[in-house]
Amino acid sequence: MKLNIINDSGMDLSEDVLNKWIKGIATELQKKKIIDNEKKTLEVSLVFLNENDAKKLNWNYRCKDYPTDILSFSSDDPASMGELVLCPQVISRQAKEHGLTLEDELGYIVLHGVLHLLGYDHEKSKVDEELMMSIQDEVFENLRNPKAGKKGKAADAAPKKSLTVKKAAKSHVKAATKSAKVPTKASEKLTKKVAKSAPKAAPVKAATSAKKTKKK
Image (cartoon, rainbow, N blue to C red; front, top):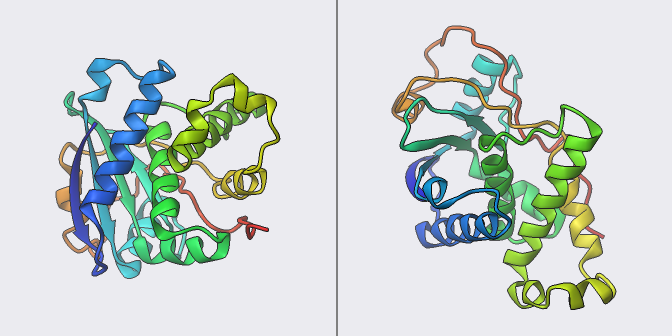
């Protein structure tokens, strides 16, 4: 997957870290046959907004009066998988709450958003939730602990030392980043002062921190 990064958050972010995560996510999803070579070449836009703009965007699309960590939007552009709008200030606080590094928290949230852009939605049913979370947890752990991921079935037979981390990761997101149709190149509009009232659209649910638990 190719990254198109727009940072209007006022917070310094590492492009190398973001590229590393998106490359790893694409590789792991291809291994699991969730994406093919064609989808692996699609562009994913990451738009970073400050808390004020993220709050306004969340209100415009969800009528929620607080900044959320991520919102996802599908795209009509055949060359694009869609857009993920993130608030790094919120994600940074969540990283501290879960005992994770900012890099890992950011990677987890991006992974969650990508799965939603691919059509996964853990709010549809318990079965859908278990499927999405199992993929999410496995990919996240493989990327955080690549050596453990290479052990394959042998690792499954051993005690899961990262169980507490998995539980923390699983509690990250209870509300889905449900995709919504927005105009192509919406990132350009999203970063142009969302203070301007946008027409009410179908609610777009976000990955909030409301039900998160601390990593033990």
